[in-house]
Amino acid sequence: MCGVHRTRLTNGKERKRFPSNQYQASLFLRPMIPAMDLHLLRSSTGFSAIRFFPRYPSPSPLRSRLFIKQKFRSNLPFPNEKAKYHRELEAAVEAVERACRLCVDVQRSLFSVEGRIIEKKDQTPVTVADFGVQALISLELSKSFPSIPLVAEEDSGFLRSNNLVDPVISAVSDQMSFNMKSLSHDDVLEAIDRGGKNAFAMGTKPATYWILDPIDGTRGFVKGSQALYVVGLSLVVEGEIVLGVMGCPNWVVDATYKSITHAQSYRNSSPGLGIIMVAHVGCGTWKKRLKNMLHSSTKISSDWTRCFVDGFCLVSDARFCIPESQTWESLPLSVLYKARIDDDNVGDKEICLLSAFCGSLCKYLMVASGRASVFILRVRSEKLIKVWDHAVGMICVHEAGGKVTDWKGRELDLAADKVERRIIYPEGGILVTNGKIHNEILEMISSISSAV
Image (tube, rainbow, N blue to C red; front, top):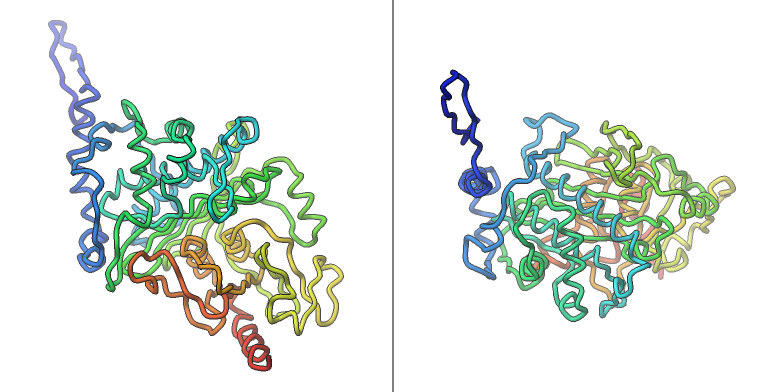
């Protein structure tokens, strides 16, 4: 074993002396940069487009205090040689699984501890879990891929002003894959701000970066009662989304969404075991149950299952999702079809509308898993479309056989925001489908819009 010292005793036996934690730390830190000699870091094109604003000199005080707690890599559902970015995907899966466990722990205490819920300026509830997930995933990714920047939803401003750093530190410390002598306020705040808009700036060339939505569906998270929410993480390499991971702790594997009655039963049911969905360019979309979410002795299968979109070829047979903030009557297709939230009684010129769940990524997850056929949303002029609400869902749907465009049929341009890569500008709206009825719906939207 590397670093183990042996001393020959008088009786002929050997005594093994293992290195100290400090020596283990040095073993961990020394190979860190060579280990990063991956295809990502060999590409100067992506990183030449990025201008960094370091918050502290390298090596950071945080990195110098780390040592390995356990070595863990998630088993992927496809051979490593087929997945160019398998190391990045393994790290992303591990980080999202840990983040989901953090969410479950925080949600249990959310309504019993005063001050755990605050309001952002846009009136979206933000919890300790929201900040904790961003800090945790930022720390985990920077441990293995320190040169890849992070585009994420939160910054530390609200955390600082509401004195919530201590509970975030506690939540993060419980789930980290490595030990620290102490996790300081600065460590957590800097980890969160690593994903903030002031952390770096992009140029006009294609860039390489992580995209994180710490909790998509925050309103569902704070409602409790098993409403769906998603932890979403994706990697963009030179402008292309190459992998994505979505963790949904409350997903009920065998739930049915055929009617509002079933959806209400779902919300009132016992906690689901949850799922984690992964996608890698060229390798498909896969899902499996989350591990140890409830800290119980329940044995769950860790087998991966390939995901495919549904096979409906007629718009009238399709199952639709829309944002909870919009109504069916506000969408162009309402001119042609009425919506019924009960597909057992859908008649002529009617479609099945699945009851809304919080967050956009939940709808992408439903389309990618075959539970919904279409997710459609209208872009409102007063509301910006954030990249983290869509990026990971896009690759999961694409790799499952579906399609994502704006209402003009154009792919969503992640580089349209040339400075920060935080905003996308779809024209008209966003259409997510099983691919089979995509063009037909686009033609309907175009025809109706031109007639208005």
